[in-house]
Image 1: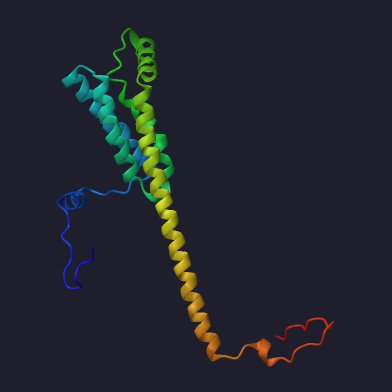
Image 2 (image 1 turned 45 degrees about the vertical axis):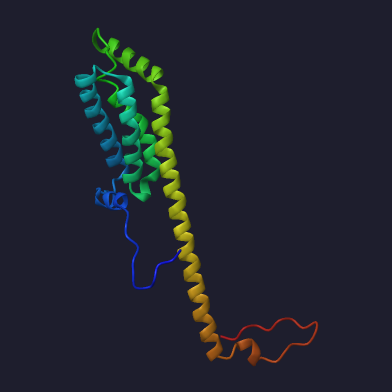
Length: 185
């Protein structure tokens, strides 16, 4: 159903709210630092408020993964699914619960990574899907621009050739078996 030419359709409130959100474009390193710092802060808050609940940490990891994939600039889209698992590993340090020095802490981190691999894979999948969809949309937009440029050039060339007589029509046709003539410069 279309609207009359003079009236615009009302914009839904959810779309208006999304337009007010920040839309930064982070470099690959910036996206990785954003994800790692955010996950570390969220893990510390999880440790203080929920005694290091892995479910809370995992649920918070999914939107951080999505935001990282949305906010990375188009040239660095491939870094989003790479930096998100690193951020998960950085964030799990405060809630892993290791004791007994550096070795005990590292064993607790490795164990926590193994036990909570589902959240890790889920967040990486979210970031990978978002980055892939963004890349496909960018490629299609580029293809449309190139097609439009080619059509514009073709239309401009057709108008120009209609004004000029082509060289091939100005030369007499060659006889059968004759070699093509060299172009004169």
